[in-house]
Image (spheres, helix red, strand yellow):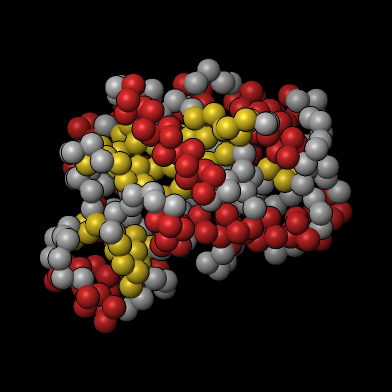
Length: 324
């Protein structure tokens, strides 16, 4: 893992000590020993010294636009089994535009989008407003707030200029879909399709000040379990649509063991893929109200935290021909 040392925007993806302890207890509950290795610049040497049978990978990486792939790449080079998706899937999953390009090939609907590295590239955007702007190579809603919603060309240029300067990376300019937002969690099962956990819906009526944008302010300053409906109160047909779309995306991107997928559904009932996290958050601190969607959906599906860790290890071990 990467340990969270500060409560700032750029470490929000890292795991706090509470989550590290929860995963430790979950691993030990399976009857196995646990060793913690920080995913820093010394990781390759330290993991060789640890000589693990399998790695429970939670590493977000330190630098670069493929940083979530660094630990999987090292582990594959050293022939060490690990939990989670491989180098290519984690690299694509961190790049919002590349994820969309792959899924469009597989006939998955996603909002129209552009990728802009400078203001000149935004000149071609003349219709389809409003758009939402997002750093293209970040997770955990980093850089996303309700202020990123632009309704005309002037707002687009102003916000794009600001974000390029602040984040020093291409910016995804994505058509904003008015409607409902859902998250699905998938959990690998040996020899079967992954399980789709209880679907979660974000109830924007509970925090109207974010204007239907689920970004950093919604996730931190305004966060409350009251804002989420899980299991989502939706018709069976809609539930089936979300589950089938999630499975199609899982296989198209060759995801392994676990993932969280975000969708929007417009007022006509059409479903749009937003993004996937093949390394979903695992925070579950009820005292601090620091709960990630993935374990929350698992709890609503009847799993304890320890059971979730066991299931993830079983999924990974099965792929490597190992017994847990």
